[in-house]
Length: 501
Image 1: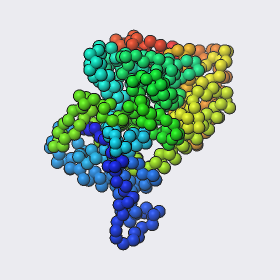
Image 2: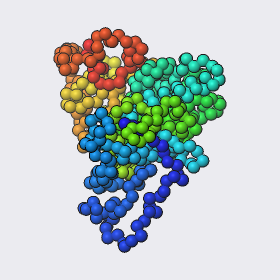
Image 3: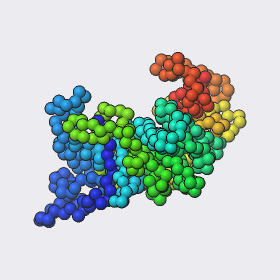
């Protein structure tokens, strides 16, 4: 069960560093972690509202979280639920509250005592978080239209054509018209002026992305915000920070994209991306309750505790939320910052080496985007292979470096993308670069006959049941999605099959 949590205001938070023990002097060395209960962490208060500044040894963090969970009821004796339980509540709900506070504060949510508390909840991932954000914007728009005695049957939402498919789903499932700002051959993010020009009386909000799927770029949320204010337009912004929410605050802290901007009313982030937790957890934060209409919430007594709930998924395991809290206190701000900076440095190194090979880079560097490398082959009219064939060749070496067809209106530009994650070291980077060089040499050495045979070999592999397309025959000809209408794609498998045909 997932409940709505609030971000505590500054006057509701006490400074843990001031809570000293008035007793004998500590006998533990600040750097002595050999014994959990002999370390200073045993007498320190656990973080409640903000990520700690420094790291905590993993053994100590694990023990502290385990101790927290011991305060829950024994799940084996929990006869209140029909659900198979191992981790219980209500103390798990307290850990959930802490995560919402620790994630909301780096997004600069309002914590002034004069304002209302920001609200947030965990989700299965950013897809659910985006759907909740869309629902909140739609309901708020409908309420305003009803109060003005105006038609409320044709809502629309504005977004970049390079959005992840979950945005298409949210609009389709909740009967909201999609209005796209299309990419071009040289621009892969939303154009702020075009976005604002699309706003009309039926617009429920604008989606802006911090870390696009294709190129990892940060969209200019501030420019959209400023244009809305300049033109006196009352239109909210939801920021999709699924990938960038745990990156931008540490690699580009001065970038204004979050609740520092007046028009930003909600933000989602994935814990299972750069939040460094296993798949199954996302988060969504609202600036204040006024942006989360009350009629979407359900107050439930379950079991024996009154809580407010706003989810699409009622039953949800607690393990990922607990894992998120572990990472937040284990790594702290310094740990997250160190990891994100290292990943950025490796991505920049890889980008530089690919540029030396003649590749055309599409991503931003030096922390101005996600730690990834997006690139394409240089123009060469007589070349017999493309990005999809290079991706397939790398797959033979074990690497999954996907090739894509870019979003609509980009002249069907093809590109490749390598996401640099926590466990991608410089050593692995060098190995990948060597394999890219080898793959290019092999492909360059193929003549037309060899390329034809190579394609035939790919087709024969794809004919195996294990590799066949998963689209059901009845639904193969859908034309309502961007992929169905324009050929825009999201990943590698579909595309090198398309190339091989």
